[in-house]
Picture (cartoon, helix red, strand yellow):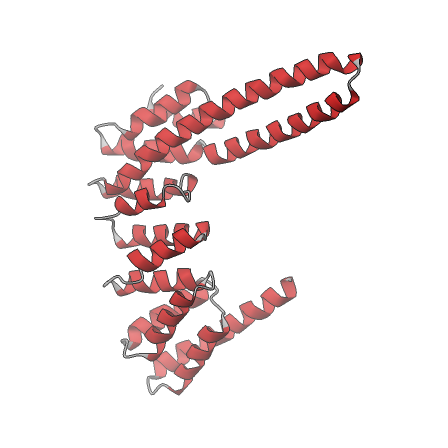
Length: 269
């Protein structure tokens, strides 16, 4: 089956060996357009979702089998054998999906360093299906020549993982960046998790000698990502005394929106 048939294949919910082989082969293809398409296919296969669904099914069937075992009568023997067969089938399927996920994940991560932007971007978008606590360092190592927009997407994927390891990588690899946009994204991503390192950087960027344009960009980033922490809004309030009218106006607007989000969050709780 060729890569251009992927949409029909996915629409049929095909999780056969053939479907995975199409994705795996495409990720190593000589043509960049095929590699990019294979990244899209890898995302569309939704392996993480399928594996989770299988695990839940296995848990439910196992509970049912244990309930029957407690009864211990002859009438349940046939049903228990049937459940055992179903559990074994699902476990084998989960193993096959996990192996495919692992191999495809390695190839997608490697394509983050592809020389073709088309492929790099497609790999970054499909990565959300494969990023885990275990492969964070592998991903970070593949980002050497990654473009800014891709790095920003990766930063928020790490924030989505939200573990100490993920947040430390954001702080170590991105918060210290010479690129002001990457630094701002990293600060906001950390702050979104209540990490003091991100909050500290935001305050320094807003209240330090940062160019007013950069401060405005950061204010918009705070609003977009709903960073309405008290320390952050206090720093924004101090910009209301700025002699720069545009910066003052943006600060007023940001405060209004951030306070609105905060109130909305309280009502939601």
